[in-house]
Length: 231
Image 1 (cartoon, rainbow, N blue to C red):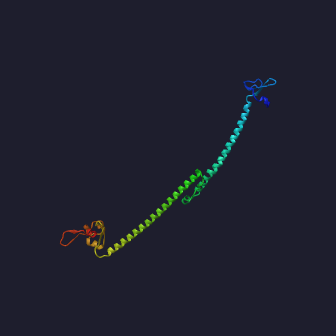
Image 2: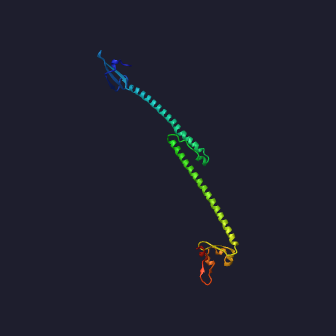
Image 3: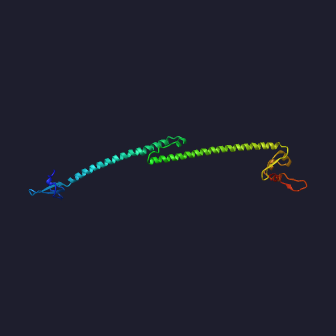
């Protein structure tokens, strides 16, 4: 019960280890009355104050748990909106590519101002670098193909020219022998084979001086016709 205002101030408070009435620990609060000159003693159970504290603790715990739960729910929805959903969209875009061309044409949304946006930005940068590398490889392959075609055409033209030269060489009635810069026989016509008595297969690659030995009249010196022609 509430005490009168005149009794709510002053006095002392003592602890009782065992109150004979309550049969438990209690508090004895002493209040001095002025008129008449009495002393009022109020006995309260020791656990009465703890009951209020326990109530406040329970209420504080409920409020704290509520705030923690609300924070976790908000964090979950924020994480879902800022991280999980963009990542799922990125995965769907990457999984939807069925060829190299489709994969190299993907552009991820990098507008988010967080790690997901940074991830999308660098993924787009890597895709751009791969696309440039693929384009350079295609250009190099096309250039090699053109060079190979030109080389084959040049080889075919050279083969045809050699064939025409061989036909022209064989049609000449005079003996004709062709050599390289070192004076080694490369080709000769039928008249030269008849004159030297050696076939083209036997003489090819050998020095001309071993096959054809000529000297001027009245001299024993043999002249190297190949060296004279090259000079």
